[in-house]
Length: 79
Picture 1 (cartoon, rainbow, N blue to C red):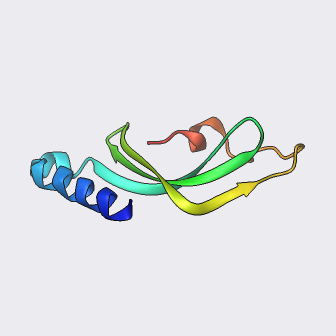
Picture 2 (cartoon, rainbow, N blue to C red):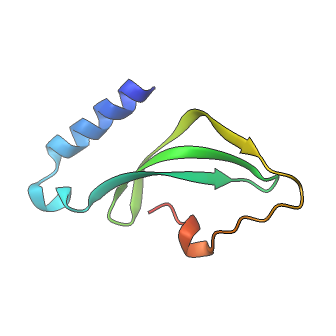
């Protein structure tokens, strides 16, 4: 899975012009559902658009029922 992610990222970078390359970045972010189950994802963005969202194996946590995500809505955006 990681090899596939790296391969897709490299192909995307090779096909992009130098101007497009400046708008491409990646990071990790936890995405949580309504039951407070959160998983980390590797997210690749092209400006403000997510082009690859890949789960990171084993990077999960189940928070208690009364837990509230401390991030604001802007911090929860993928890109």
